[in-house]
Amino acid sequence: MNNKNLWIYGGIGLLLILVIVIFMIPGGDGKKTGKSIGDLVKIGKNGTTIDDPYFPDAPHPASEDPKLEYEAEKLWPHTLKPQPTEKDREKVREEWGRFSVKYPKNIYIPNEFRPPLTEKEAADVRKELDTFTEVDIFQL
Image (cartoon, rainbow, N blue to C red; front, top):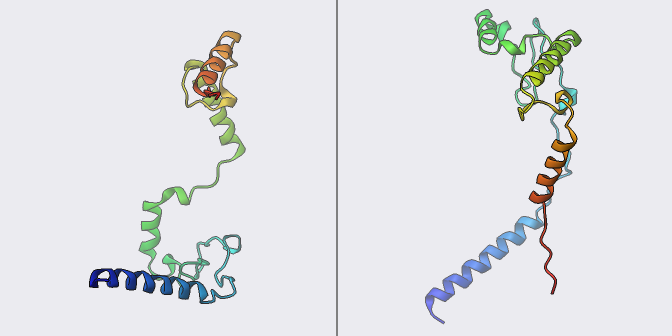
């Protein structure tokens, strides 16, 4: 046995011992000490603390420097906008309806706004789907 083979077998042996030692070390109780996402509270305008799992001791930016709040509003204005109301959602539905009438073949129109397929179109779609997903069966 030459010196090169001795190094190879020694390296493999050390690697196996390392793997065994890693699996033998106990992993702890498996409980996380951080907060879950459901426990988080949104930041208030006057809040002095941020309930954040990554930086729990971080103060609210506006409490340190009022300019930071302006910068946050400038950089991320969508975070300060209110959630869409039912009136806004209805307006979007109407816009999709008008768009689907004007461009009925557009692939990005959600299914609920697409006009119903005719019998011929449905047959063509079914034929294309069957052709695309066809599986060849080989018999021995």
